[in-house]
Image 1 (cartoon, rainbow, N blue to C red):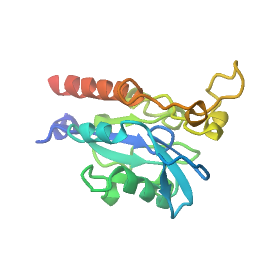
Image 2 (cartoon, helix red, strand yellow; image 1 turned 90 degrees about the vertical axis):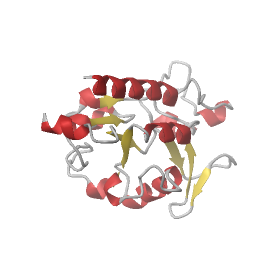
Image 3 (cartoon, rainbow, N blue to C red; image 1 turned 180 degrees about the vertical axis):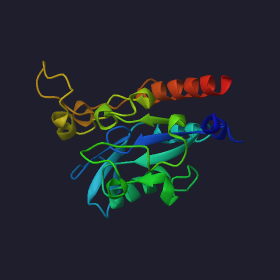
Length: 199
């Protein structure tokens, strides 16, 4: 009860931990599309999911946001710079970014023991359920965002009945910001937040 009461703090915000890999962006070493962002310290291009910044601006009104990646800290820092350039999402604090070097779980699994706050008040958005075996009830799993062919080809969950999987770039299209995965997540997270604070 004490943890639930603590969650109902003045701003009535829960915590959302977002995977920084194919859940919200896709990174690759080589690309020539002008719509991509260059991460010079990592030597790669990255493509944000359409509508990501408005999605995050809406979420931060209800939740505290965290980035948790199994990538290295320098990768996480580059991603946060791209996601929260002006610091308005609160991701600039060291306690809001968790990288592989910070993880206490091993074997490719993630855990909430290093996220501030009561574990039962945390929602997780990650494109891989396999890395959260102990937190399945708190997990929302969006469809992976494959902008590049190489990413789609590595994803064993993609349909291969019509040939090798292709990324959105080679198909000449992109996910819809209004009808895509982030819009669906926005509706789900808003409903979960409302239901939690109605009890």
